[in-house]
Image 1 (cartoon, rainbow, N blue to C red):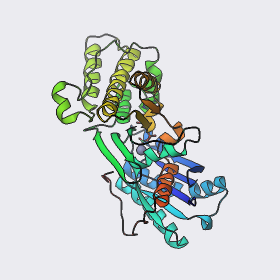
Image 2: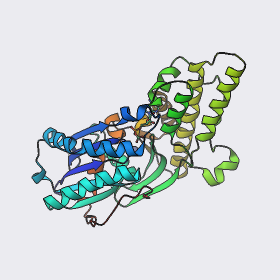
Image 3: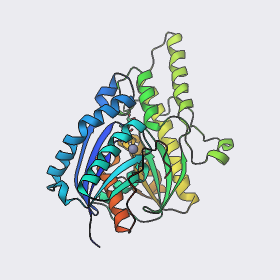
Image 4: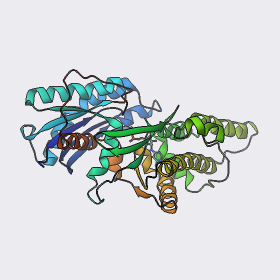
Length: 344
Ligand code: KG4
Ligand code: ZN
């Protein structure tokens, strides 16, 4: 098997990610984020993200090539995220990828962002090779999805996803409500460190017996966000101080509990003793701890790639395309466009 040299472009949200891999080996992974520009709006602004991608792409490609020690002419293929994500942001990456592939005369692979998150695991040099089937839980500011992976290149099934806010989005919104800056995940994590996770019994979305028939693997975080808002408002109305640490810890516990419970239920239901985590929310300390403890108790092997591969990046996109090439799959036709709701 020859190992293709692939450059991957990721622009589905606010990270401009350029990654280069040779087969399953990571050569470079440069990430430029427009997070700071979105901070004053309290969330990602699509138009701002698209413009930032346009500015960051060329220098990022140069930096990734230099870091990998290769030139454009060395590339065997170009890969790009075609969805899901923000349409305008995706279009910028797709335009760049098509221009590169056409001018270099290389094949172009349009890949799915969520499957790319799973492919990130392949680049973890310290881990044993990924075995199938595996359950994957992907949690970021843009998505919260539970997938059953029987084969990375041909058989990925979406078991469930959020019906409203993504988990990271919930962290960002609750942080804002508590007067903490954006992005809220790390802030809540910090504030929660001294709080009591059992102080306030916040609701676990879509976890009642009546929800489980239809939404066993789905998530909902907007009710939780509203519950936090109502609880703090009542405190303030009564002239009492809001115990930020306890609210943060109790909120975080509610999110983590639901994520881990549903992911391990998927493992048990499908007889799958492996769980892979991905997405920027994996940075959450409590999520990592609870997932590790409960997976161990359930006899499930937990895999968490390094954080630089869990957040949005181009290397995972390149890695997925390399797998497709090695599996003998044909490249994409140039006519593809951005698909903000692309299914797996
Ligand atoms: O994957 P990512 O870098 O970008 C996308 O959303 O695509 O994830 C960013 C999200 C933000 O919503 C941020 O608040 C959340 O991940 N996040 C965290 C933590 N660090 C980042 N959420 C909870 N705990 C954290 N420590
Ligand atoms: Zn992502």
